[in-house]
Amino acid sequence: MYSIEIKFKMIIAILFFIGILYGSHLFVIWTNQTIINSEITPFLYSLPVIILISFMFLIFISMKISDYLYSIIYLIFGLYLGYLLYIFLVSIALKILLIFYIPPLYISLLSLYFLPLIICIYGIINALVTKIIKIVLKYPGFKGKYTILHLSDIHLGAIHQKNSVKRIVKEIQNLEESPDIVVITGDMADGSLKVKSDWLSPFDLLDMPILFITGNHEELNPKNDMLDEVRMTNIKYIGKHESFIHKGVNFIGADFDYDLNEVLSKIKPEENMPNVFLYHVPKISPEELKEYNIFLFLAGHTHGGQIFPLNILAYLTNKCFKGLYSDQEKMHHVFVSEGVNNAVVPMRVGSHRVFPLITIEGELSD
View 1 (cartoon, rainbow, N blue to C red):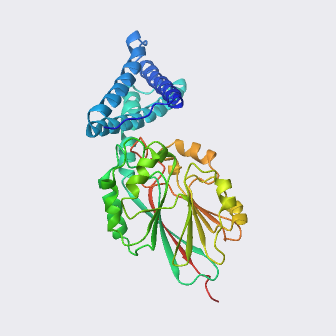
View 2: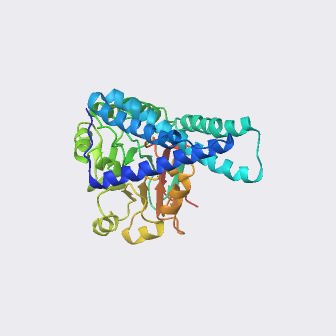
View 3: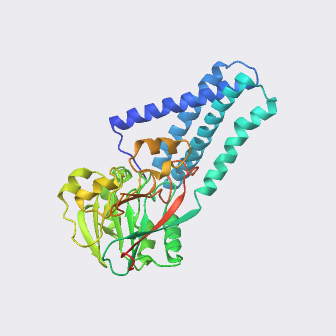
């Protein structure tokens, strides 16, 4: 059965999270009572507490009983969080609207409860749709072409398990052109449930190298257990600053728990060869890559914000948010993947499940 090591910081984070959820519930109740012109009763004040304690109790108890039961409750809780978010946002909009205009009761109630449901259904469906992104980068003197499939944030755990990996492998096999290599830039594990080597075994069906470095969620898995499972497959772990040269391209990896600037200052990139650096968090700009001789920096972590309005927060807190960023000379690039799967809330609103195919080619001849 799954268990989590409880730490002081985790307790503080959980209490803060519960406080936010309680406030959101209370605001929705306040909006509901305003619409129907009724007071908030003592029971309604306690209702959010009852809901949250019930979920917390079910989650922790199910951990001790069954991984399958735990996964179901975890999924329901994630869906509930997504629905609560959009009810809360609609509540804010309705409270502002009610200052200037009072719509019919049925319209207000439908807007409050049905509109968020529609958004959530869209988010669930959108999270299952794969967007293929094709990018071509020029590297002077490079012979032929070399295609990298950049995967990130697979988040194997309570929600995504072996079937998710099977689907990923099937999608790779069905690509119009097979990539030369697959790189996974962290958070292959979610931390919500320990990853098993059986879940990863479908990757062994692929006939190209697969490289992997860890992200912040592997720290919760815990990391060493995750790496033990990875080593039982054909996936090559390069998270300790190892290099892997393949068909004239040099890949260098660093795990999430290493200081990025310190790692970059110590690595020895190859000369006259594209150096591709793998790190989970996009903490650096293309202009900063010049001094390290890194041609391409691949990262994930942001999920493209995953669900609106978290997209705004992700945009404001990351140097590179999603997609491709290049310097003026087009010789140093950062690509941030929106990820394959999702964390906690199984929805995507304002972001995409992506399969980025990045091809490196030589300069075109005149």
